[in-house]
Image 1 (tube, rainbow, N blue to C red):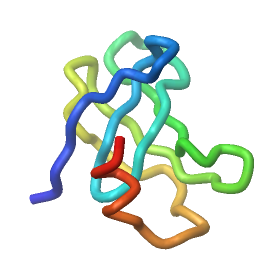
Image 2: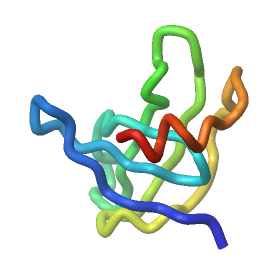
Image 3: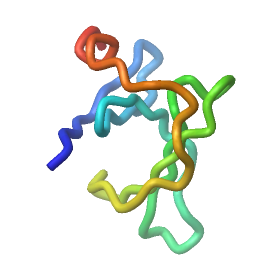
Length: 76
């Protein structure tokens, strides 16, 4: 099972680590039961995931354009 944890940025923005990548909260789904997350490297990567409102991983939406970097996640 992949690891996941909540991270708060210096600007108090919600971030989420899942499977070696860091995501930034984008928006809630219209139905109010999902959260949409974008890859932290959003300018160069299309990676996205969905979670439920308790931040439990639901699914990948787009794949990342770069390899995982566990040392980057650990540094956060």
